[in-house]
Length: 239
Image (tube, rainbow, N blue to C red):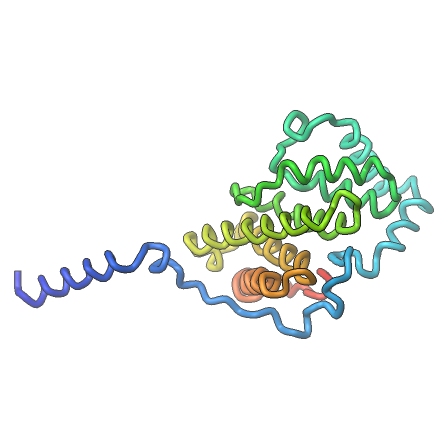
């Protein structure tokens, strides 16, 4: 073997030994969410999806109880309230029951719904990404919607923010390893939405990490999913 070829092989081996695989794989460029999309009052809770809709939802719930949407929502809430423990009655790493119950609490003020939302949220959200992005993102909604519930003490909120950040970090690492921005699957759409919702949920209390999560969501949506000719999504709808 020529000496110069041997030298190149040895040099490459040395470089790969000195640089960790994680560093070599981390090639994703992230883009900041444009300032025009940031909420005017990030400390406002609830905010996500509900900023200007909560009163309308209350009117819909009480004025038109026979509509299919309201009847279906009530049916699901009644079922969730009858359950005993999350791990017996649904996947305990599934965040949608907490979000649904939290929304019912916001609309009706029903104490049982608010407490049940806390019961199925706080013990079961670990902050670890278990490739269940399509349900984990609901924990971000529940954080925003339960923000003023008595079970959300200052310590509880701080702990949940850490878990939402950890979930995003864990998910982003898996995203980067799988070149998530290059293809469109249900998992990647859910992960992108999860970054968005997590960033919006914590932005008012942790601006630095909130912006980091929003950057991940914006990159995944604007520069990943939309390259596949998906319809342009009005980002302001999140706020």
